[in-house]
Amino acid sequence: MFKIGDFSRLGQVSVRMLRHYDKLGLLKPNQIDTFTGYRYYTIDQLARLNRIVALNGLGLTLQQITALIDRRDGLSVAQLRGMLTLRQAELEQELAEKHFQLAGVAARLRQIELEGQESPYEIVIKSVEALPIVGLRQTVPTMQQMGYYCRAMYEQLYTHLSWYDIDPLPHELTLYHNAEYTETNLHVETAAQIDPDLIDEHPADDLLVFYRLPAVAQVAALIYTGAYAEVGQGFLALLEWIGTHNQLVAGPVRELHLSGPAHIKGVLQEPAILELQVPIQPLP
Image (cartoon, rainbow, N blue to C red; front, side, top):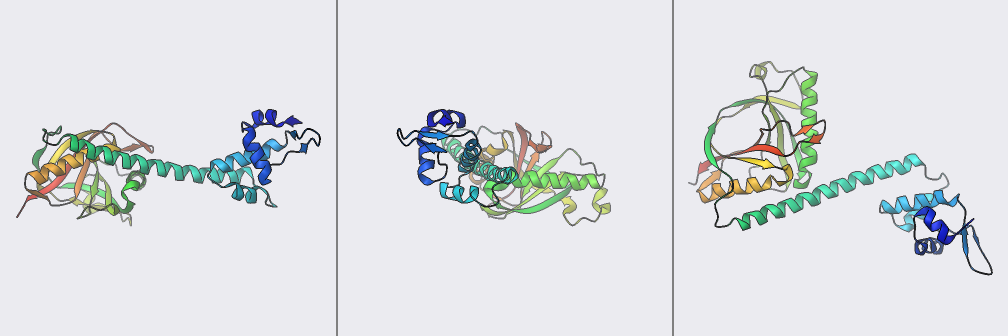
């Protein structure tokens, strides 16, 4: 049997917390000396302590933990792992959203710092030819989920192309189709350039769309190098340039991945080299 201090070292839990667990009836000592009041634990109780700490780390209240581990059928390792996996996914999504939020603030701050100064980007006006592509469109629920959805969409795109033995050409691109700015229900298309002959000979597929991305007489464009999460800095600079030059956005914004696929085996490839293109027309 172990005194409370020794047991706290074995379980890496403070004596204060062990006493709190005892008070709640969550983990009572195996024995309490009637004369000294010392609490004693057995090594077998370490398994219950491990479950308490793991569930508490998942964000459950001590009352919820009590109900779970005192169930008649117990709580298996597989169930614990499933709960951990779910919580891990939730935390990763929360972290991604916070990172996106911080990147947005940084982009705005960068624009404020550059007020009255020359843009760090070289912005050019050019025409672009029609581009034969295969695209996959989905509605992304929120701006914060953009990275997760794009990764899944590109994976679907290339999986379907491999089924048909179609080799995409170098240009990979993302298209943003919303006519107005919105942070929810974003109409996004992940696409890859393909052989022009495939436009008319493409296989039947309910998910993919084979077509020619229309030529555009004028786009404002710049080259961005850096992290995908910070690409907003480039877009803001480009849109501000468009506004100050009395132009309007006249079509879907295009993001060409000049450095290659955004993801390889599910891993984001950074730093990225992107060409950001915005179709424009003069103010009426």
